[in-house]
Image (cartoon, rainbow, N blue to C red; front, side, top):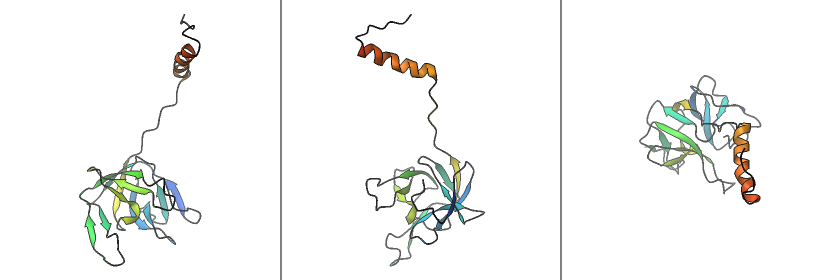
Length: 150
């Protein structure tokens, strides 16, 4: 997902093996991912996208303007998630670490390099036979098991 307004920013969806870098997005107060070879192109991640970082992830101090201190997060792999969806004014893009910690993308340090390992699985398109198989039990319940298979 791309939670930031992309009106004036070039963007595209992520692909497997994309080389990314964390960047401060131009004319915003937020951070995100851009192509390593062309940082002017923002990359949008779908929830569930898995990333591998070259080094252990680091985040900025929550009060970064008071303290330039960085914090190691103890992981170099993460899964992209959306959080705080019930709060429209909050940041939604986050990374979930293997230990269950969640860090907002906007709190990551700029310049961290990652590779897209895997995109989220897509639900397979239902076949006509599968659709009919799911309809028959509903019809049987609705019509008192009067339908029988031949």
